[in-house]
Length: 469
Image (cartoon, rainbow, N blue to C red; front, side):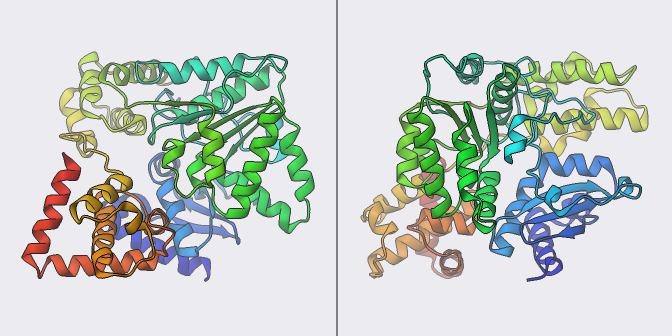
């Protein structure tokens, strides 16, 4: 399918997902600048749009494009106005992994800082952001253990015995795991250790490219001749062959006494699309969670951002009461805090209005959540539906087609689609490796039935209440 056709399908999905107003504000002006088989470069007219999309919607665009193209794809955002006097980069440059957005622990400077080259980049690694350090990571109760473990790993010498191997850090979006991984990489690299920092997506592309180019042996040797391997976003590691190679690399490094650090959005046991051997190996090390940001930590993050903004923008200030209002009401994650603070800055700079509570209320009203929604997991849905219909969870995941199993399975898929943010392909994988079209059929089937059958509608509502309790 041509890139233009794929992008039109992605645009339609984004419009349906976010609504007309959000789509017109952030997605309408995006254009395709260059497209290859594995990488796409999109452009927008302003730096502000690029920054906002990178921080808030890049992952969603990548996910939707990969689903429509039926293969993983790498997205790079550029500014059209900044491209006129620049030579177009080689296709290989487009395939560079996106720079990770600074998560909750970071007080990201408002202007882009140059990305430092690293030893890992020569091996195909993802670039490091010099802003993401332990000093810029704001510590609180929810991340103290993770930060301490990360510092222990980062400050160890190559000759020291390995204490936590592998170290596995998991957290939701925007809570600081990428910041910690980059801080580990930067500290270890400065100490002269041979490090390689990769996203799971970059690992996948590197391995597939080595197979195509018949350089698989060199790829394997490069991975095994390092002191510290850091893998981010493990939940995106796809493909049986790629997972098998990752497992071999993991075993080789750990058995050789080399350090491995991995991050994902869930504990290893919850990554059901991941090979069992990999999950078992990861669970054998130290697993730590970064919890949600409490109000005090959110306020500390905002104070640090304010200090950096004042150094760059003369005369800019935010009263403590306004910072407190933002910290109290923007509760989802650190990226929402970034967005809220940047809106205050933009409004002040563009309109010369002083930053007040009233201005903050207007600027961030869409980021304010009345109550933190409970995060429902697919495993919980499967368990509660199985209990309700007196079947086992293994029955729901099996290939059995009896009526006593098919209906609960379809209801569970419907609830997974309506109560979680998981995509149809991922839901299919979590239901015994089914195709996304099977999930779509189940969702549409139950949607139709609940509108016609009051008894079934009541059953579904009871299950929703149980899951939300």
